[in-house]
Image (cartoon, rainbow, N blue to C red; front, top):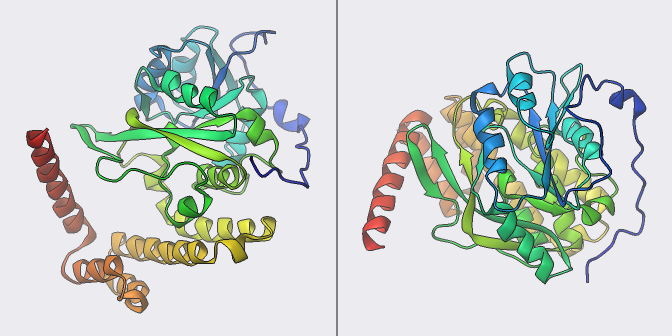
Amino acid sequence: MPRIPTDKQGQKVNTQETSHLASQSVKDSNNKPKVSVIMNCLNGEKYLREAIDSVYTQTYKDWEIIFWDNASTDKSAEIAQSHDHRVRYFKSEETYLLGKARNLAFKQAKGEYIALLDVDDVWLPNKLEEQLKLFDKNSNLGMTFSNSIFFDETGDKYEMFRFVQPYKGNVFGNLLANNFISTETMIYKRAALERLDYIFDDEFTTVMDFDLSLRVAYYYEIDYVSEPLSKWRMHKESESHKRRSLIPPENFKMLEKLMENIPDIQESFSKEIKDFRKSIIYKYALLEWFNDNRGAAKNYLRPYLNDARFFITFVFATIFSYSQFEGLKSTAKKILSTICLKKA
């Protein structure tokens, strides 16, 4: 059975925020769709139509899109509002951190299940159908996810779980030690979210989805579809790429909050906490390497050279710039994918 929080606090509706809504495509209906797809957008016109169209091509049809325009200045509004009533359009008068913008969108959602789709990613047609089946089979699930394909302007690159399958069931510790869930694959049970003290953390702009998944995973089981059901776009204009410097400090802050709010976490998951802290140090090292500060990167890595990952990265950072390393890694992945395709 799920572990239900005993000190749940009700989430207050901020009427000042809802007064910032500039427009909505249609009047609210009494009909409640099964799935609410939350799409947050800040100047996402380039890939937006493709993302929305991937929801319209779903084999499962009982859904709505909650489109939250985070004060975009491009043609995002025009693209979103060109669709029918299933895209419910909202716009804020100022740009908020993504965690807060996600919460504002969630307040408008009617669905029994909440899915996330960023405006530069896409879903494959059977995503909703296949993941919803898992909820029907297990009432203890709080969340489902799937395999995903990483792609760029040249085409598909690799599957997220081609070689190693992720954990499922009670996965809190495993997920804390190694975040293996990609945002565009996530579907949450609304009832599970509403039992938490809060949904998305307003203070975060890079780790709010990971943070939410961890808190759901602490209380509920999680299941997984091994088939790729979504595609994550790799490009330099993505928010995750532009805000990569925020990822390590937000991870540390997230861990501090988890330890404050979950009473037994330090006792029950001490090894996983240690592994997670080490992974944050590794992220700091990669960030310094990316910024061409190879000396600083190696200083982060040096205390952990008994770990193979840290040692190998230390060697590569000594020899190559980050861009050179990325080129080598890309070539290696292409060769590996070619070998796998030939064997298949």
